[in-house]
Length: 237
Figure 1 (cartoon, rainbow, N blue to C red):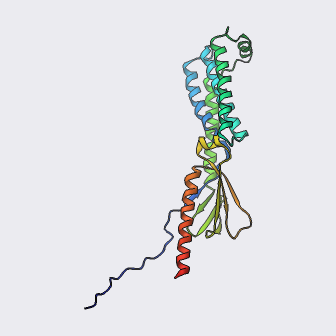
Figure 2: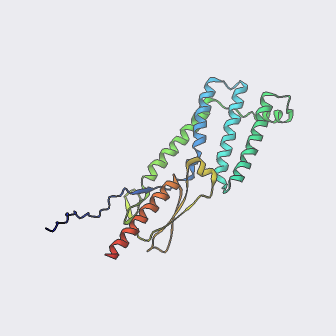
């Protein structure tokens, strides 16, 4: 008596994989440490008034962090060595300034310069900076909703414009590359540059400041690898 082989239902291939969203953010988002510092400085200024030495300390700390944040926007630190050297210099200068504030006789020359500059502000100043950055971040969040990329199993989509313009590119043989040019930016937001080169396009698309760059690149590579295996299986049948 011959056995009847079990009937295996056919599995229909669908494009059910979750799409990967890629957003290129402007560099202004790297100022979020200044945004947080302005909130803390504003609250601290409500406690310590402008006629106290603590107010000057708050001003020095805030300006130092702002200076470091602006340097991050202006320059790239491709190696950890350069970043460590920069932090050593910042810590040394900041310690010298704070020592001259709380111990005026220790470094009288620096104390005299600080007394002329007098870097202190009231709470309203810090909260104005907080409100300004908050408004900019809100505008950025609205803007990126109208300009982003979507990677699917069989196509690459570019959504842009307030009228929801859409450009489609073929996903098979899509080439991607990841670049982390600034260690500081990667430490702040795990961000980096992603370069996408569709097979049927003569130009490459460069996306700067993509957040969680490693996980995004890994997910795209996994999706494209699964697609290539599927295409090869279909060709071999």
